[in-house]
Image 1 (tube, one colour):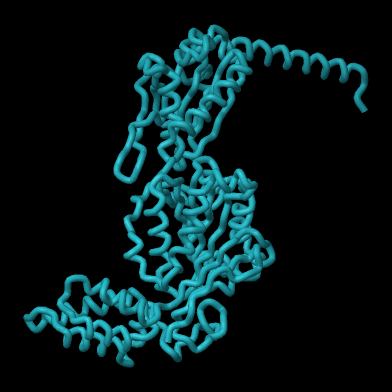
Image 2: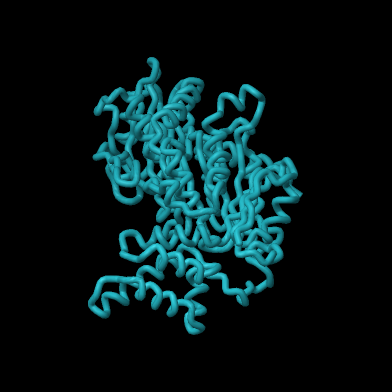
Length: 497
């Protein structure tokens, strides 16, 4: 038990410590660094009394922020200063730059970094610098910093100081609007990568493909069906919205490997030169949240998820959280969002249950089958190009090469040319026949499989076809488009003997 003397002594000690802390705080506030003095002169108040508002932005949006701040500065070079110092800058907060007991942070050169603005263009952006702006008569200070994952900063940041907090909030609203208005991401083809530090490195720019409809060899009507759903809905945006119809759509392309699913997507991107596209495949599908945010912000847009079955087949957790995150992204957009999600899979059976349990995410499923004889003939002729093979030789080769894909046709033509070159002559029909014979031998069985060929006795590990359906005995020349929301087949081709 404490007696009265003990209590009195403890109360006196507490009052002494509180008084000492108050004096230390007052003294610290008066010890502004040169940076703090510059900010004080700009704001007109002691910056230590002003709360810091931090805006975190993805590093791939740093260019947008840099452009927006330059617009707000009116091009005044004097509004941007740097902070001198060593790598300790990357660990310090804006409050420490303003007042610090041991470091006298001073004015120095602005730090810059190159950031991509397209597949072949870059911009020099501020990676570490202090903006001293006056917006509608209100002075505002903004510390702009790029991400530094090696120092634990996964995102770019903007630290905002203003004596008027309402004006600071209005400034951030205006800044975000300018970032969208002047964004370098709009209308680009983007992908996501991982950094060497294991974190998301953000969006990277890809060249938009140039694939014409003639380059996509599919059964008659199939490509038109996909284009009508992905591109046509966007082109009829006004009419659909006026009729109360939604624009968001999900398309699933399924079928064996090598049948043209990826080429179909490349054609869709060619057909939509002003549309923002995000391509995710493999481990980058983990960035679905960021991709959906880009798609939502920069409409009209397309999000492509290639080999989505690999996500569904992930066995490290059950249920598969990444697959559900993908489905949530499809469901999280408003119906009037002009966003198309296009997914591809070689094994539709692993997706059927998840999609059926959460209907409405995919409203068009299209089978992309192995090419039938007419398509194989077109593929062989396409890859033959200017090679002097006769139409009859092409037709004979296509008829023999049942259940093969475009990859097989491409390799066949290369081997034909190589065979002719080895004997010192120009390619002729016999070279084509010899190359085909070589690829169809038993010893080339694995090669054929790697080229996408479906041998008649080469069922997959689970039995049956790759898409999880029963083999109907046809040569793969049929296709079907199915609309789950309507519960009906909306288009079907005939089989080809």
